[in-house]
Image 1 (tube, helix red, strand yellow):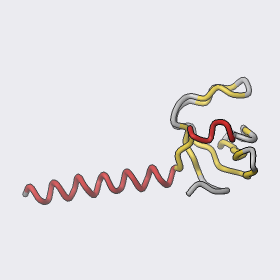
Image 2 (cartoon, one colour; image 1 turned 90 degrees about the vertical axis):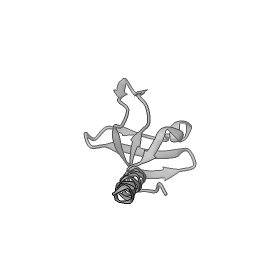
Image 3 (cartoon, one colour; image 1 turned 180 degrees about the vertical axis):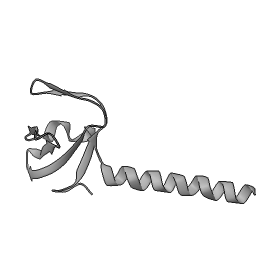
Image 4 (cartoon, one colour; image 1 turned 180 degrees about the horizontal axis):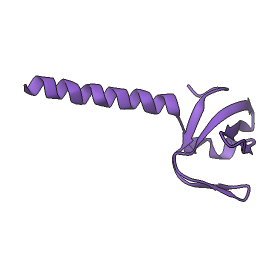
Length: 82
């Protein structure tokens, strides 16, 4: 679940506030309101009230969990074939 303090990546390029953030650019959720999350990247760039674009974010922990499950599935298939 995405909440304050979560790390998120963007799913595609995002042009906002005279900057272009490339796919997989990471941000930290720094606050939340009815208008959406406020996010900050590692360079200190902040985007406020992202409510209209919240669907482009994916939680980094979620990505790691999916990756681990996929690796486990591949390893299980390899062991079953041996």
